[in-house]
View: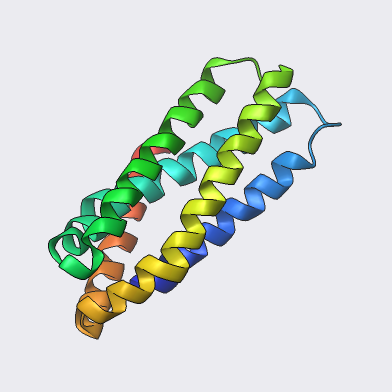
Length: 149
């Protein structure tokens, strides 16, 4: 499977979870907690497969090295915000502010990936590599989801 299409599907899935979370102000904390748990799992798995499968390949090429290093840093910011959210009560007003900060960081990262990194990556990866990395990511995601189930 094409790695870029696969990762774009992940981005869309996460965006949809954010939308659901933002519309949960009036619903039970348990539903918000379920959505947050789902969001965290999706972001954790997505970051893991990018950092272990795609980014190491892109970091080797001069055309994609700088943006890849930046992507690692952005992932760390997202992980830090997820840890903050996990540590505070979900009904805390600060939780909502931190969630909005997380969403903003994720949207910025997605925009850079889809509009800069993926374009540059297409110039350094062959179609065979694009498909191979996609297949490896798909399998790694399956294994991660099975392990966390």
